[in-house]
Length: 171
View: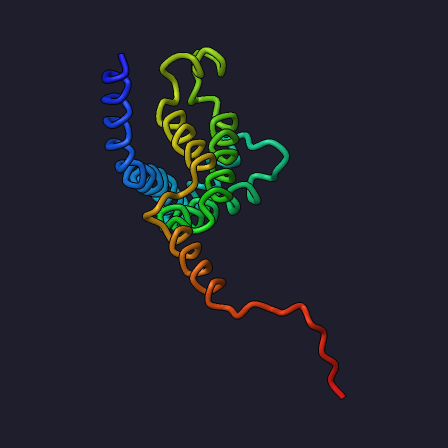
């Protein structure tokens, strides 16, 4: 029995080398989807205004504010996500944004929101949501600016001389 468990442990340890690549692909896949949506909004302001005034029912925001906020969210945050900078916060914001997008557009759930959640409606949003949730929980991974910043800051903090704790006065 131990050999089976040992083999399983070795196999899963070997497969864990794929984690940074999987996290990078999650970031890029979701970033591209959101960025493309932002580019569409940017390139057709009249169409975007129409959608937010007539189709999208964003709670608590005026249509013009929702349109501008949505467009800039989709144009800016995907770059941070793809590069892996501030990943957990950016992924959390996009996770909530994704939920608001689904709730605000009833055409995505013709069979009802709850039936759609468990059924085949808005599958792309479900996939993005799961990837974003994984990024919130796991972070960007080793192939990211977050990891680079962490490595550089560790290197910089170990190079600093230790303080003696002595107080010196200047006269």
